[in-house]
Image (cartoon, rainbow, N blue to C red):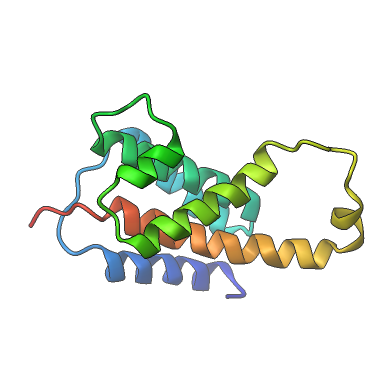
Length: 142
Protein backbone atom coordinates (compact mmCIF):
# COMPACT_ATOMS: atom_id res chain seq x y z
CA UNK A 1 0.00 0.00 0.00
CA UNK A 2 1.72 3.06 -1.25
CA UNK A 3 -0.75 5.92 -1.15
CA UNK A 4 -3.43 7.15 1.20
CA UNK A 5 -6.31 6.08 -1.07
CA UNK A 6 -5.04 2.51 -1.04
CA UNK A 7 -4.89 2.60 2.76
CA UNK A 8 -8.45 3.93 3.04
CA UNK A 9 -9.56 1.18 0.64
CA UNK A 10 -7.76 -1.38 2.78
CA UNK A 11 -9.56 -0.18 5.92
CA UNK A 12 -12.87 -0.32 4.08
CA UNK A 13 -12.11 -3.89 3.00
CA UNK A 14 -11.56 -4.78 6.68
CA UNK A 15 -14.96 -3.32 7.52
CA UNK A 16 -16.53 -5.41 4.78
CA UNK A 17 -14.68 -8.52 5.94
CA UNK A 18 -15.39 -8.30 9.67
CA UNK A 19 -18.66 -6.37 10.01
CA UNK A 20 -21.38 -8.99 9.77
CA UNK A 21 -24.35 -6.99 11.05
CA UNK A 22 -24.57 -3.97 13.31
CA UNK A 23 -22.39 -3.20 16.29
CA UNK A 24 -22.82 -0.94 19.28
CA UNK A 25 -19.58 0.77 20.28
CA UNK A 26 -18.90 3.29 23.00
CA UNK A 27 -17.97 6.78 21.86
CA UNK A 28 -14.48 6.22 23.29
CA UNK A 29 -14.03 3.13 21.15
CA UNK A 30 -15.36 4.90 18.04
CA UNK A 31 -13.04 7.86 18.62
CA UNK A 32 -10.03 5.57 19.06
CA UNK A 33 -10.87 3.68 15.85
CA UNK A 34 -11.11 6.98 13.96
CA UNK A 35 -7.73 8.14 15.29
CA UNK A 36 -6.17 4.77 14.59
CA UNK A 37 -7.40 4.95 10.99
CA UNK A 38 -5.97 8.44 10.55
CA UNK A 39 -2.62 7.32 11.95
CA UNK A 40 -2.58 4.28 9.67
CA UNK A 41 -3.31 6.30 6.54
CA UNK A 42 -0.42 8.72 7.15
CA UNK A 43 2.06 5.94 8.01
CA UNK A 44 2.31 6.84 11.69
CA UNK A 45 2.84 3.17 12.48
CA UNK A 46 3.68 3.47 16.16
CA UNK A 47 0.67 5.72 16.73
CA UNK A 48 -1.47 3.21 14.85
CA UNK A 49 -0.33 0.39 17.12
CA UNK A 50 -0.74 2.30 20.36
CA UNK A 51 -4.16 3.65 19.41
CA UNK A 52 -5.39 0.28 18.11
CA UNK A 53 -4.42 -1.41 21.36
CA UNK A 54 -6.20 1.33 23.32
CA UNK A 55 -9.31 0.80 21.17
CA UNK A 56 -9.19 -2.96 21.62
CA UNK A 57 -8.78 -2.66 25.38
CA UNK A 58 -11.65 -0.15 25.51
CA UNK A 59 -13.89 -2.53 23.58
CA UNK A 60 -12.98 -5.51 25.75
CA UNK A 61 -13.71 -3.46 28.88
CA UNK A 62 -17.10 -2.49 27.45
CA UNK A 63 -17.91 -6.18 26.92
CA UNK A 64 -16.75 -7.32 30.37
CA UNK A 65 -18.11 -6.80 33.84
CA UNK A 66 -14.53 -7.11 35.13
CA UNK A 67 -13.39 -3.53 34.46
CA UNK A 68 -10.47 -3.65 36.91
CA UNK A 69 -8.69 -6.46 35.11
CA UNK A 70 -5.51 -5.92 33.14
CA UNK A 71 -5.55 -5.91 29.36
CA UNK A 72 -3.85 -9.30 29.43
CA UNK A 73 -6.63 -10.72 31.61
CA UNK A 74 -9.33 -9.13 29.45
CA UNK A 75 -7.89 -10.89 26.42
CA UNK A 76 -7.80 -14.21 28.26
CA UNK A 77 -11.43 -14.05 29.45
CA UNK A 78 -12.82 -12.74 26.16
CA UNK A 79 -14.95 -14.86 23.85
CA UNK A 80 -12.46 -14.43 21.01
CA UNK A 81 -11.00 -17.42 19.18
CA UNK A 82 -7.57 -18.69 20.26
CA UNK A 83 -5.78 -17.32 17.18
CA UNK A 84 -7.12 -13.83 17.88
CA UNK A 85 -6.09 -14.09 21.53
CA UNK A 86 -2.58 -15.18 20.54
CA UNK A 87 -2.29 -12.29 18.07
CA UNK A 88 -3.58 -9.84 20.67
CA UNK A 89 -0.95 -11.00 23.16
CA UNK A 90 1.73 -10.69 20.49
CA UNK A 91 0.54 -7.16 19.65
CA UNK A 92 0.28 -6.27 23.36
CA UNK A 93 3.85 -7.38 24.03
CA UNK A 94 5.16 -5.51 20.98
CA UNK A 95 3.32 -2.35 22.04
CA UNK A 96 4.67 -2.70 25.59
CA UNK A 97 8.21 -2.80 24.22
CA UNK A 98 7.63 0.69 22.80
CA UNK A 99 5.48 2.17 25.56
CA UNK A 100 7.55 0.91 28.49
CA UNK A 101 11.12 1.50 27.34
CA UNK A 102 13.36 0.13 30.08
CA UNK A 103 16.70 1.18 28.61
CA UNK A 104 16.19 4.36 26.57
CA UNK A 105 19.92 4.80 25.93
CA UNK A 106 20.27 1.28 24.53
CA UNK A 107 19.22 2.59 21.13
CA UNK A 108 21.94 1.33 18.78
CA UNK A 109 19.58 -1.06 16.96
CA UNK A 110 17.13 1.75 16.36
CA UNK A 111 19.88 3.98 15.00
CA UNK A 112 21.68 1.35 12.92
CA UNK A 113 18.71 -0.54 11.52
CA UNK A 114 16.09 2.17 11.05
CA UNK A 115 14.64 0.58 7.91
CA UNK A 116 14.28 -2.78 9.66
CA UNK A 117 12.57 -1.13 12.63
CA UNK A 118 10.25 0.82 10.32
CA UNK A 119 9.32 -2.34 8.43
CA UNK A 120 8.52 -4.16 11.66
CA UNK A 121 6.39 -1.23 12.85
CA UNK A 122 4.53 -1.24 9.54
CA UNK A 123 3.83 -4.99 9.79
CA UNK A 124 2.52 -4.62 13.33
CA UNK A 125 0.39 -1.62 12.35
CA UNK A 126 -1.31 -3.77 9.70
CA UNK A 127 -1.89 -6.47 12.32
CA UNK A 128 -3.21 -3.80 14.70
CA UNK A 129 -5.83 -2.38 12.32
CA UNK A 130 -6.95 -5.92 11.48
CA UNK A 131 -7.32 -6.90 15.12
CA UNK A 132 -9.04 -3.63 16.00
CA UNK A 133 -11.72 -4.33 13.40
CA UNK A 134 -11.98 -8.03 14.16
CA UNK A 135 -12.37 -7.45 17.91
CA UNK A 136 -14.63 -4.39 17.65
CA UNK A 137 -16.99 -6.23 15.33
CA UNK A 138 -16.90 -9.53 17.23
CA UNK A 139 -20.29 -9.13 18.93
CA UNK A 140 -22.70 -8.04 16.18
CA UNK A 141 -26.42 -7.75 16.42
CA UNK A 142 -28.39 -8.66 13.35
